Length: 279
Image (cartoon, rainbow, N blue to C red; front, side, top):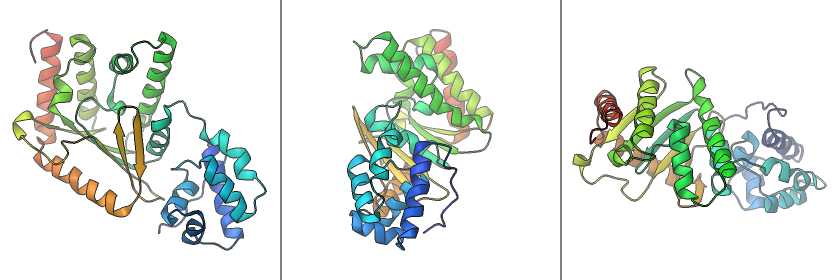
């Protein structure tokens, strides 16, 4: 198991809880595996809580206080650490994403959130919630755009995205929005900030036709895989599951166009959208 990394407790409520959990666990003389056994979770999950890549939920906070004798500290502070600007089903994944050193994602139907422009994100959010007030849509768009700020770092995290051609062909928000969205991806690729591959229709059947995959790796915690559906999502850390999905991702990358050929295709489609030609 990776050696624990010193956390800055002031950086976020989750970092504070993670640092306190580690302190309380070590004071009790328990390993991560031993504490996990008492809480009916894996030692890896305890490590993720301490590293701030997973959220401590209220029911587990009560158990932590009981096992570690922390007199309600985690129960009292769990609510503040659980607050999020993201939808409940995605909040934990978004928080983990922000601390990842590597992100590999396959997107079959839409451009992933980290690569979206505000206009594209607005079209996606409005389609998902057609009767929501404009204020609510703008909150969701702002949160999605804020997530992409992690790409401001010139080197980390590594972001490798495999897009299905369908995500590029669907004119989400209209041709002008798509032209901007694809040009944005082209810019990120040309700045060597992301790796993007496209699985063309002509590739036929592939390893992940049943849905999207997001794999995340961390410096000081085990890797995670995130699965998402309509209004639902879950994180998995079970090693066999993560290995299987990493293998699936490798197969996807192998049947996709090369990064250079993918860039040519995306750039051509952006020009087609901008000139109102059928892409």
